Length: 138
Image (tube, rainbow, N blue to C red):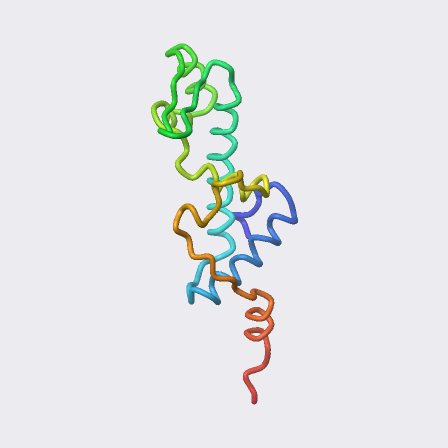
């Protein structure tokens, strides 16, 4: 699992393995753990960069319009420090609520999946994994 060497903890790697198994079973996909570790690292970079930017007093993030406002000098400093900051020069992170749910384990009140039109179907993941890992002999 070379792609997982930069994941920040063993628990996160185990979670990625588990999630990969579930997604592959439910969606009948063939994602690899290495590929999903790479996705995790990219999402973590987006989350860390955007969270840092909006924590700075020089920046104003208009949540309703998802626009970013800051002095040019601020942006120049940020571009040197965080190459990804360029992506946020005019608009905020469109998936910040989902990224917060992944990395903070929370979703702000009123910003949950139902407001975004996501499917709220409950899937019994343990039953899927348990059934699929059993013997095919009946």
